[in-house]
Amino acid sequence: MIDHKSDRQRFFKKHFLSGISLVICAVAVGVIWQEFRRIDWPLVWENLNHLSGAQLGLASFFVVCSYGAIANYDLLAFRYLQKTLDTYKIAFTGLITYAISPNVGFAFLSGSMLRYRLYRQWQVSHLEIAQVIAFTNLSLWVGLLLISGIIFTIFKFPLPTGIQLPFFAKSLQGFGILCLGISALYVLGSWVFKKPLQWRNYQFKFPSLKLSLQQVLVFSLDWGFAALALHSLLAPPFNYPVFFGVYVLAMVAGLVSTIPGGLGIFETVILFFLQDTQPEEVILATLIVFRGLYYLLPFAIAVAALLLFEYRQTRKPKQF
Image (cartoon, rainbow, N blue to C red):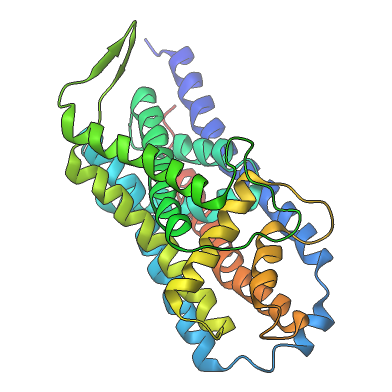
């Protein structure tokens, strides 16, 4: 006897999962289109004469290196879960997620939906997908807290007007020490607690010390190569370690502050530190090029790869 109900469920599940990808891609394309319309393209072209082919090539190389590091967030998560899945499938999912979700907005939600769509295709359970999502986001925050803590404690950066620290931090150095303390507690927990921690019905297992240090390493390579890409385009008069600090400050400022006006927080911070070295128009044009290399080009490649993946799924034999 043919189970038509089961066939319909499989059919619905297959097309529902594909629909997730298509909706996210459509939203992302719409957001990118709005961004393109707001850019003053004549101003950009007018101020790009200073960029050489060598600079663009070097920046592109560093972007590739950064995304190579990004692929490891999901790989570490599967190592933590002790779950077996083909490496190329994990890396594919991680790269697709990180290339598309920042352009959609609500990166956590859109990234979670993309992971759910792809990992369910490869029979990863709902619980395991949730654990992968939690671990990859934890990796980002652990790395961010440790690296930010080190930089803000060592370098005494001034803050641009309008950039406010969280209410619990009286100075950037104090904020850095707090970040260091939180990340140190996490690493210490990975060293001390070998068994899962239990609270009511909830359980948390620290990763091994080696794995927690790998989380920090992957984050450092991810943001480090991204900063190198921008450094090679801007060619600022100060050395890379200082510029990396500026880059981290600009990124963190976008997470903890909001400012009114047309400029984004990231651009505001970069302009603040480079305003005496180059004309403002040149810096802004270069930042647009950086966003094109680091966000828009990988986004376009990821959307094409995801649509090709979905097309190949539709070509598979139907199960009813």
